[in-house]
Length: 397
Image (cartoon, rainbow, N blue to C red; front, side):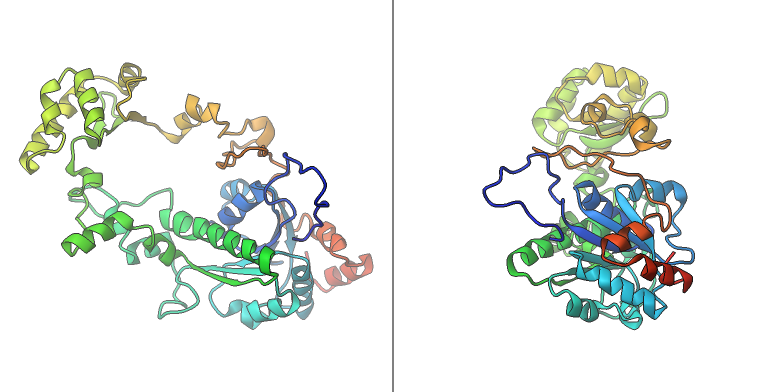
């Protein structure tokens, strides 16, 4: 890694962040890449966010501030030879580079994998794109909806007799992109620590989301096709696994898939007669049971149900608005929402990974564009006069 380790005889620091000493050059923007490096930064990596000297990362400021904390920011003009040379020098001391340009762009700029590998063979180079570095779609533009649509995942999200649902939590971008990239980077980084040789990690968001469509694929393997939304066990076929509207227009999530939970739920609502319909005989029976449960649930507001079913051990929970989830006792107990005093004016989520010997902290907020350019370059061995010359040439910002 980029920092020296303590001697073998030294007592390990149990407070040490697991990725302390790992330096990551982040040339991504918008959501998938920045969320990937957010997780790595929160776990202790020194992430340097590299933006161009023009617009830079054009994500909305409210989003930018949430996904770029614990990173330092610099600006480079990679269309200039001096900017390219600067990046290559930074690569010599880095462990990871992640980029999200269309395939071929980094090569045209002179900072493709081969060029970087020649300067630092142990560096892990991750390319995070919509469709990957190969295949007929490699050069196609796209967004979350496109990747979810092409992979068959969007077809499985929604309700009966409706168009596929759009989500404000972009599943393809985050699951297929961000988390797949984290997995690939950490695997390659672990191997590089053993062998001294890095790898080119090619992550396609469409691949990543496709690979997680496990339950629909099981249906294809057994029945020849994925079950239409609303007809599968997890999308509405079962009354024991469904959303029910409450009297105040909110929803109760009943996820009593196991019979013991369904029996307990039926007893709590005074309908033991429905216990036998845990797995309905047919669609008509399912609709009858669903209607009966809906009438009962719809007679009371969500707060009443939440209190009544609290501690009932039957897999039933309220469907909260995000603003309410932020103050829910479970997430408060887990420390998942940072106090505003720690995170600035905007509320932020904490790192979701809890592990022994490590306590997550916001080391610094989302950087301003180019905020740490001088600091990073000086630490990398650039002389002050070199930095001044680069800035005069507008190769850095």
